[in-house]
Length: 124
Image (cartoon, rainbow, N blue to C red; front, top):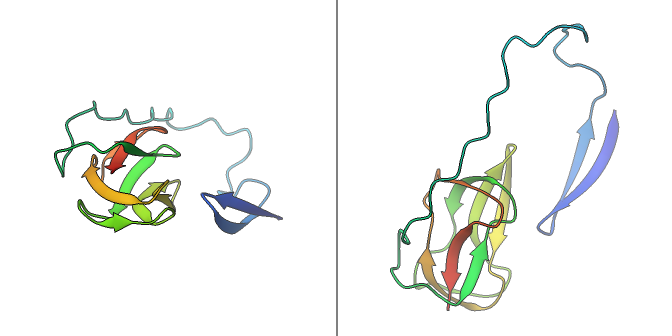
């Protein structure tokens, strides 16, 4: 086993990785199914809440799925406050406000798939 410390968006995680196959299948076994393609992001649409776009963009740092909305339109936030929680590879990744501001729009809904760099919300 190997121990790693991983930092994601300022959160530190201690991870233990086991070497070798954990399924008990021989290393030469052929795969039983072809891997599935990654889900494609939904086409860009008008904001789902708020209506007006703000000047400060809050973007996804990694591809994943929207797990939870931490802020709502009209809410005042300080830099570093969580806006949205993404889920990627069974980890919850907070997406935080880059600057102080008020939430102008939330551009995603819980369950939406997002790509890295996708617009999640805007602040004024």
